[in-house]
Each structure stands twice: as structure tokens, then as C-alpha cells.
Amino acid sequence: MFGLPFVGAGAWLYLGQEQYPPVVGLPFAAFGLFIITVGVYVHLISPGELRTNGDEAIVAKRHPTQRVATAKIGLGLPLLIVTVYLLYFTYVPYLYPTFTLIIGLYLFSVGVYTYWTNTLTTYYVTTERVLKEYRFLSLVRQEVPRTKIRGVQERKSFLETVAGLGNVLVASGQGRSLEVQMRNIQRPEEFADEIRDLVTE
Image 1: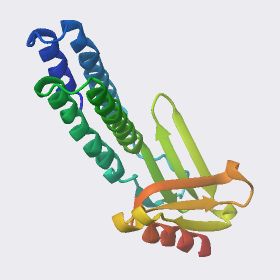
Image 2: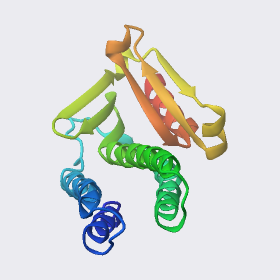
Image 3: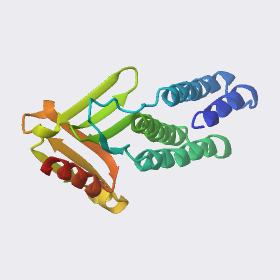
Image 4: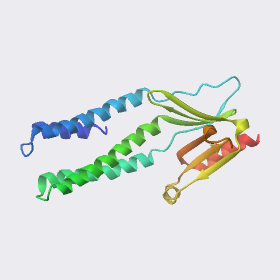
């Protein structure tokens, strides 16, 4: 869905206008096709259920919220629309549409990347451990066994507090190699409490 407007814009720039050279449309079409291709791949490899050991049971499961990703995409799209307006309906210097294009593409690209990352990231709390799984080209797993958890910390910036989001850090006290950081969690207090309840059992 995110890539189709770029493919359409590229096709129009290549076939439907005469103000600029047709080759201008190729990067837009290529960018759109890239987004579509990676988006299909992300959809096909989205994480399955966690394999548990023996009597281990899943207590809680969360994904990062997509609010942050959609906000970045939402900020980038208007700037891209402004770029088209400045190029085709005004006579302002090319510096202005170039500036809005770069900023708009940056925000849009970061938003789409965040969306993909959040889709492929899962946080689990089981009866035996707390873990984070990220699967793109390969599986990356960080986990802290229940018996080694020494601290559960909640972190929120001002904007995250307003948006109802936050981060939860589970640490073992043995350095960064044994910690799990869970970002962009809705209702992080509830999630942190579930982990604390697990530790005190």
C-alpha cells in the first residue's frame, strides 16, 4: 500500500508529463517497487509462535505499537505532496521542492522501516524467561532467564507519556549482554507488572 503511490508517480512522470525528462520517474517507480517487495517479504515471514520448553507457558506477548511508525509516515506524506505542488504549480526555485522532497522521503522511509521492524519484533514473558525476538533475514533473540532477573525498569519520555507509550527494560545485573529492552509498548505499566509478578512467584 505504501509503495503504490510511488509506482504511480513514477509511471506518470515517465509517461504522462512533458515538463521534465521521463527518466525522472524511474527512481520513484524503483523506490515504490522496493517498498512493495520488502513489504510482501515482511508479511510472509512475520514471526510464528514461540517454541517453549517442557512445562514452560507463555504468560504475556506484545508487539511494539505502530503509532510511532504511522506518525512518521503521516509527517512525510504531506511534504511529498507539497513537493509535487511546488514543482508543477509554482515557479519557486528548485531549492524549495528539493528540500521538502529530502525531508519528506526521510520521514516516510524511517516510518516504513519502523513499521517493518515493529511487525517483525515480538516480546514474550513466559514462566521461565523474558525475551525479545526479531526476525528479518535471520532470527535475533535476546532473553533473560527468570532466575537471573534483577531489575524491571519503565522509561517514558514526555511525548511517550502523552501518547500512552513507554519502554520496559529487564536487566540481570550482569551487563548489557543479559538484558531485554522493549520499546514502544502500549500500557507499559501492565507489562512491567506482569514481569514483576513472574519474578516474585
